[in-house]
Image (cartoon, rainbow, N blue to C red; front, side):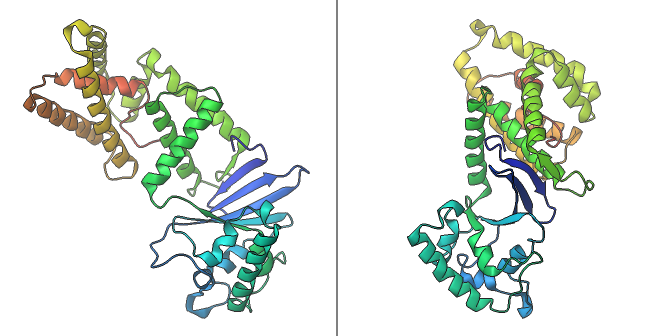
Length: 340
């Protein structure tokens, strides 16, 4: 949406897993119906797999379910997003729609059409008259990375490139937090929040992005972000001690004559890694937010301090806590699940 002005809206979990609303150069609306599949399959997707019906019932195969989303006056397209790959027979669907007319691509697509039509010879057209033949012409197979970790890594690279192109030089931890907030926004809009909550317009996203980036940038200026995050987690009474530890950390960090800066940087990297692991568990529901999560963070820091001491490196528990609250005030750590 940020890069393509023609992409006007995305609908989440309504009419299909996703509906992408395009406006082409002639200002013609095109609705793209997207199904997302992350399945553990015994083999790659094939003609047999996408034509397989549930108990033989017409209309229940993957291809027919996608086809039957086409029920409007506007032009329609289709997309299948999967983590599992296809076999060679379905490879023609990976060719961009604009390149399908090229002779070799058209020939391979024709072979695929014949194979699928043999399997679904009794398939009914969709409500707007779209046939299986037309569905194949207008369907794109979008293979994504195999794992969530690989997908996250790719998305973070995409987000970094987007931020750079827009002139936003965010440090990596703020970029990662922005990504978490984007995921939270999608999760919020994918829920049963009401008839109008599932639509995200391009302009709304661009405005949200600018506000989220400004919110991340202004965090370090005062302790207002630290206070707000503790308040949101039911930890209001913790703010006094947290602010003291924050300023103690800042004084020590800015006085390198008392400590080895390289040693402090390594310890801070370890704290970042510990908190990042805990935060990821928080966001997927493995740890409860609020005071319990705050306590889990403190326990992790205490264990880190003990390991450092065992290795002959002395670092104070106060310094570790102060750095945690410093990260909280920078909006890259929190004590509740990610919110948009």
